[in-house]
Amino acid sequence: MRWKWFKSYKTFWWPVFTGILLLACLVLFGHKADTFFALQLPHSELLNVVFSVITWMGDGLFCVLAVLLFALFVSTGRALCLASGYIAGSLVVQLGKLVFFKGTPRPIKWLELNRIVHELPQGLEPHLWNSFPSGHSASAMALFFFLATQVKSSKWRFFLGVMAIVTGYSRIYLYMHFPEDVLAGFIVGAITMVPLWVIWSDYLARTKHSWMQRPLLKWRN
Image (cartoon, rainbow, N blue to C red):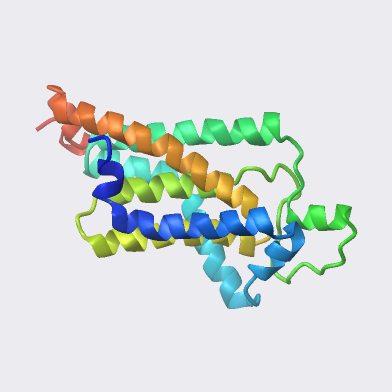
């Protein structure tokens, strides 16, 4: 069970590790502003809409909705697993944002403070402060890894890994975060969700509480 999180879901982790490695190299060896601009796609109304939709997959409300759907239609125990991973990651993120790295400027504010002339792409409305780490990236990593454990198709697992990375990238495209914020969010999401998934998987395999295996809608059956 210890290494099942990687061996059984390696098609999920390949795009994730590739994205994390790329971000890590850019953060370690690139200039903050140059790296941020290098990762920007040409902005357009269409891409703004696309990435605004994708980024919502890392929103707290989306994760709450996913937990609720699992609880109602799949399994109470699995819903609790997802909820615990999301809560743990959110606590770490909020400690970073509001305690250890409080007031970290987001891209548009950082550029202003460093007197780097740059016009905000039309249609974007980024926040200004508390940039590190990216909460959306942490939530997306936790959610998509959990979903990867719930499907059997390696193609779907690969797709979910790609979506985790793309959701994190959407935060850069939308001028909400720097690459290091997203990288930290990915790591937070992984190190909180994976251990909790291992613990919950062991527990659900051994528990005698049948209600944990049923969705809420079938508790009375």
